[in-house]
Image 1 (cartoon, rainbow, N blue to C red):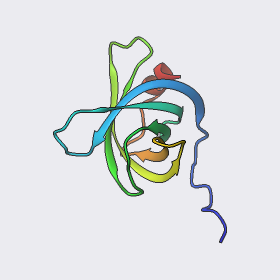
Image 2: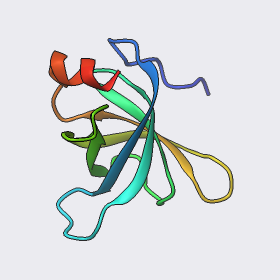
Image 3: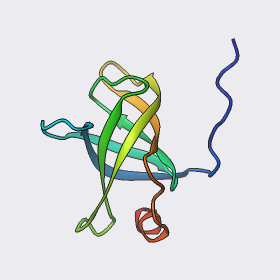
Length: 106
């Protein structure tokens, strides 16, 4: 079976950004995530919390100045084990990042 075709319409840029996420519409606390690449439409994260394809998360990404946050709903499109207790998670935002938000995260 061949891998899924590439669905991205914008290239992602490599980065290292601190983030936090939790299951969408849950009241529990946030857990840490690391953004390893990002585009206005989506991102790739490293998380230490088990998630599945199709899950939706509330994702908060810190701006470079750490004083503001970009907050989006994030739908998981793929999950790959990363070591014993971490996962690489790729997905899309519910709405595209505004140019100024994206520029501040790069």
